[in-house]
Length: 451
Image (cartoon, rainbow, N blue to C red):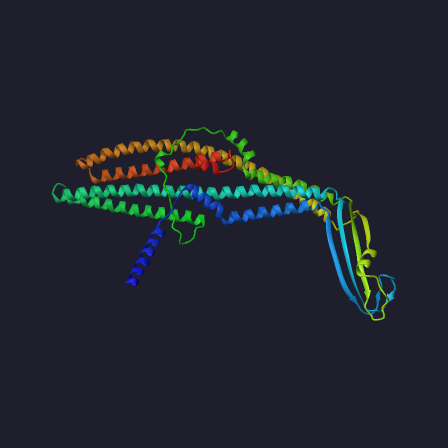
């Protein structure tokens, strides 16, 4: 009896677990973006490059500090050696131990170290901006895939409604044929139409499934993860009539967007790199100091009496300070090559910045033109949809009254379906274009998603 009860409990637990596992989380657009930003492999690699630039910056800062090193050695001598106490040659077996502390610092290097540190700081800032560019690229890709899913599911919903309407009319005509009020040929025509609508519904469903799979793959979810998005109420999304000026948007975008900031920081870094390379041509002055002490003992049996370990360490203590001047005369064109390479990087950064500014202005201009065209297309699509709804309602009533044939009814329904899908397409397209333009004035998409 207990065994049966245990089996029932296990069955209930397993069944509940399966039901819980089958529950699918509905992902909003913000959920998709948050997951992609946190888990995208390419973005994580870019973040590692930014951390590497930060480590380089720390290294250049530490290079300005003096170095401090401690050293010690111990050895046992056999045969011929030098007695450090008398500086005479000896053949006695001995042991020795020494300690040293030394420091060195650069007094003047032609400001190469300072310019190198400044260049590393600019490159680190460029890495941060490049990371933002990569993150925005990830978000743009998610946006495109997400709205493609919305469009595909909108088409699927419209196709389902069309198929249901065809099934409803087919059922009505079938009953009329059974009572002899309609010809059998009319039923065959409606069956053909219903079959076409079922095919359209299947194609729309497959298209929506493919769009959902594309978004899932872009999020880099696991192969067994259940995935479904939360459909927003598209009818309640308001489309505002706004006018955008290309020049005003560009003036804001050129000072805001990370794609320009990253190249600008690289340009500033290249200027500092030129100064650092030129600094290698100047004389370099460095200084340092050292403290040394040691212990020496002859280990043979007939060795004379020697000072104790601590006494020798105290007596053998010595100090030294030094200054070193290095004047470069000829270095196999190494310095000249470094200067030339730095100048070439600066020229390349200037050209890339100018090219990116031209590309940005072109993108903004095209975005504004596309938005204006999209507004007119959306307005026309909405007007066309309203007209076709009224037209289809009139044709449907005539068809039910027997005043029009199946051909006219099917044509009206097909026209209405196209009008619905076109209104959906132009609305989603206009939303994306508006968000793109607003992005140019902020530099980041995060604040625009909530709106």
